[in-house]
Structure formats: C-alpha cells, structure tokens
Length: 232
Image (cartoon, rainbow, N blue to C red; front, side):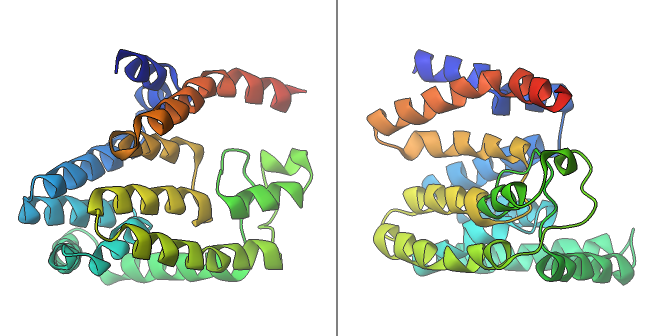
C-alpha cells in the first residue's frame, strides 16, 4: 500500500493536479464519493455525486450508464433526476442559450473531427496526432477528420457492451472498467483527466494494482520529456 501510494504521489497525473488546480480535482472527488457511497449502499448520496459529476462533465455519462444493467439501476435514474434539477437551478444564473451552445459544441465535435493537441490522450486523438505534423499539436489549425477518428468511439462500443455483460454482478469493477473505456474512447479527453485511473486501483487484483501503479509512477517523466520534445 505504501508503494502504491508513493507511485500515485509521484505520478504526473497526481501532482500536476495540485500544480494546475484543474477542474479534474473536483471531478475526481465527486466520482470518489459516488463510488464509495455506492459500495456502502448509500444510494441517494451516490446518485447526488454522480449528478454533480455529470453536471460538471457530460462524458461521465459513459461511466454511469453501464450501472443501469446492474441491480443499482435506480441510482442511474436518480442521477438523471439530479442532473435535471441542477440544470433547472442553473437557469437562475444563465439562460437556456448556454445549454443550446453546449449542445452545438458537442454536435460540432462529431462533425468536424478532433483537434490534435499534444495533451489529448484518447485513441481518436492519438490517431489525429499521427495524421498531422507535430508542429500542429501545439496550435492546431483545424480539427483532423478521418474515418479512423470519427468511427473509433463507435468501434469501441462492443467492448463496452462486453464489459458490462461480464461485470454486471460487480458494480465496483464495472464502474472501473467503464471509466477506463471513457479515457480510451471519448475523443476530447485531456491528459489531466487520467487522474481518474487512481479510482480504478482499489478494485483491481493486487498484481494489476502494482502494474497500474508502476505505470502511473513512470508518468513522473512525462512533463520534462514532452516539453523537451516540443522545444526541439
């Protein structure tokens, strides 16, 4: 446990959050509360945390939906109700135009492709990297559109369905699996979002926990290596 904790503390995805104070810290805490409350059968608390996480980042829906195939399907319904309530409350500060703009942004991503920023880490974004010159990774001139970029998320859906079928008797591991799927296949995923991998550690068998901890620890070298390459 000490070794795993040290690996997480050294990892780029851990300490970078403290430096940048990004919104992913809030997302991580909300999902940690949601999963912990879920394990302790505190359904209302878990649903509220899921709802807040969904309100913060819509892609969390991919990690939540597989739970609808388990005995905790009511939690998904409660989370959806919480999201609707938060959306209605937000109208006191922002009009419906902001929600329409958000919807247009999501559909535009599907139409235009993926911008190949160097710190996007999904499989579609990685393909976009290979289809554009490295100079454009710093300031992309336009999104990269390709059948590979456009269809990879859909090609990954059978994997998500298989994992849901295989793990539906164990909601904790199913949530961990769907979080990993989200990081791989949702196109607009940034490197700092990988802190969610830490949430997967508690449900892994020991040998895989050590493997993931070692990989997280190895990301300590990520930032100086990338900055050096970008400088060249």
